[in-house]
Image (cartoon, rainbow, N blue to C red):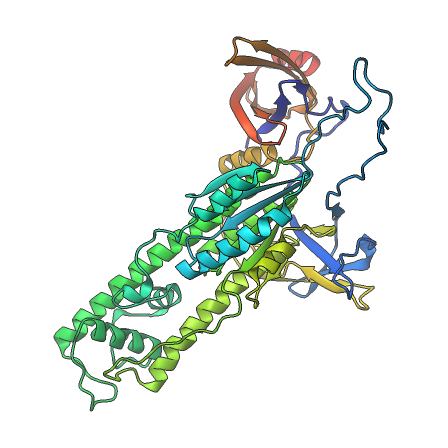
Length: 549
């Protein structure tokens, strides 16, 4: 198998930003992000809720499914603090440049980026209104000269990139609407939640279970609701009521169709929300300073098939040092339950089954928001109607976040859930916020797909890759007031490439990706080139000595 070596070069118009060539004795190229490396962000707080930053690696114990693990990577991320103002006329970095007045200051990049992600795909109209009111009241308190904020939505319909312009941010917040995914569920026939649809499609063994005489009370209750909304008369004297074969077939067909439709719509909404979160993490990974996402959502369910993409999002956020804080926009709420119709055909046990399903779906939505926060070192605000206070708390990144990394032994690609537990030896009056678990991959990613994903992740990563020594030079040409051209030349050290011998040829593939970012860390443009080499031994010797241009 040919291993693809990848060189990623980040450049700007002013010159090379990539590190200088590594020593020639460096080992062959290898991405530092291994598939079996599990990263666990941990925030430790004292009894006053302040983050503690004085712990060391030996103070932590990490358990995977109850089995102690060896922590192989340990780091501490600190939030960006705005430096204190120097005395007037002082120059903290040395003598003034020629022609520069003493009071002039070098331009600096923002130190804090906060992205508000509103889950309009799952929020109800009343949720949107409450979230808008809280965000508009809190936003101006979040902004300062060192902070940039942005407004995004999971549907992608609302977008305001990072800016310090308060009116633009308020305008974006006010444009948020409930996601256009059809009518409210109570208008459907039958009204069906994603939880119930998943139960009917994926957990009911046969179609014949969908009947009013089914021992499964949840399905029986849905069937009776369907009969009512179809205006099929139900005899009040029979418990449970019996339907004619024709009416039973009609009810069964309607329930089955509604379940599949709801499951498809709900699955699409969940996948879209995850994709929006993943893309936001990727775009924020190049930003300087601290990076925080505040996700405002009522929560939503994920099927088992969606758990692996969710876990991948966690890993991307951890590697990009992006903290995701979540706010349950429902606040302090009570489920209304189901109301019996005027005919009184929803019996006690069946009504209880519907209410239990609604409670379970609501609980799973909250659990998801808690998982997202815990997995990335963030906080989960819930159970309070003071959404403004919640947004204020979540807009700030913890002062200290510990990143623990380990490689589980014999990790199977079976999609199983692994529980995680973090303990510290200095546990007196300290609270540990950590990732509760992760989902093992349920499939093996092909080498081509994996390589492309690694290229994308490395482009947007702030980590410096120096495994393949590279010399880079740039030239900048101003064609006119509106156009410019940037020419980039690279010399790749051939000793850093690992060729595979096949017959009389030496095979290797090389992907070079050039990306240009603006001073705020946003991607402006990029180009990618892939080269395939089939070199004879004499040519390979020349490449080893002189490199590739």
